[in-house]
Image 1: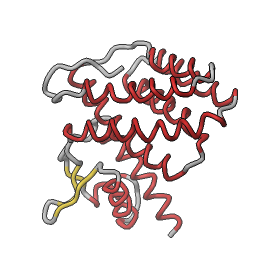
Image 2 (image 1 turned 90 degrees about the vertical axis):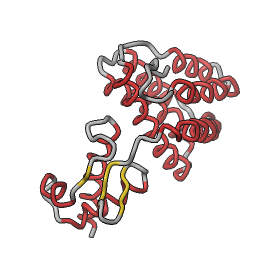
Image 3 (image 1 turned 30 degrees about the horizontal axis):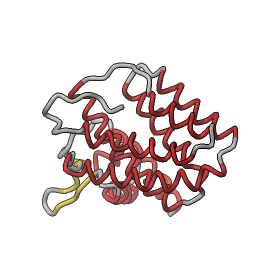
Image 4 (image 1 turned 135 degrees about the horizontal axis):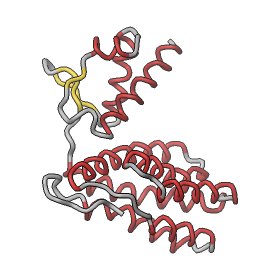
Length: 216
């Protein structure tokens, strides 16, 4: 049973990343036998992986249609942005008193990696690392799990906008200002900037068939 859980987690992570970065397009079918063959596994961990992905709103299942990649729901942008802004600020307020020099160095490293990213994949990996490093010390596992799910949904929108509007290497000034406020022990300013920063995705994620600038 433990082996199945390990395998299912590996399958869910791999398939989930392909959905997020657009390698698997919305409404693409996911066949149990094909996935099992790719990962050299039985159907049991594949079914469990599909359940995990469905819980993350990355796949949908329907009678006679089977399991498919979930549609890209641009109507949920406002909900995702407002939930992330509210919850990440709660997490940062709880994490801030525990931020050590080591934690701040991790945040700075994520900013550096984002500034030097040459691809959207590297940039988004650094962006996720930044937001995780900000809040990880809060030691609130349920809150962190919710934020992780919201961050995945956000990443999927970022990749979709990159495919529509293009992407070019750039610096993320918001991230630097948030770190500067934390170093100066100005938590209210850091939280306000974080909330505004997250909500830019709502303003920028217009219908994805229109030309949109990349989120800051």
